[in-house]
Image 1 (cartoon, one colour):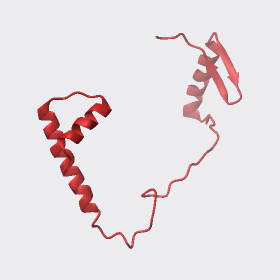
Image 2: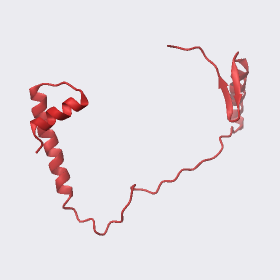
Image 3: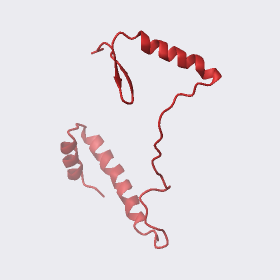
Length: 104
């Protein structure tokens, strides 16, 4: 079980404020969580391979390209018209930046 002094120390580190009742409740809740974590130490994982993720993930990079199909052709033309209507724009090697007014 985690002590109330440990909770007070964590509270100071996190710079949060809560009362005595919350401290007691948090100590109780964290105690339950830590007890469950201790029970996981007893699990037999000798047959399980070491892994960093549950599934195999890899990054897939591909170039973004506009598909000008019949249904999308109208949207594509609208996007091009909007870009051309912008008063300030900057072309970059990978696209067009549109300058807008600051909102803050």
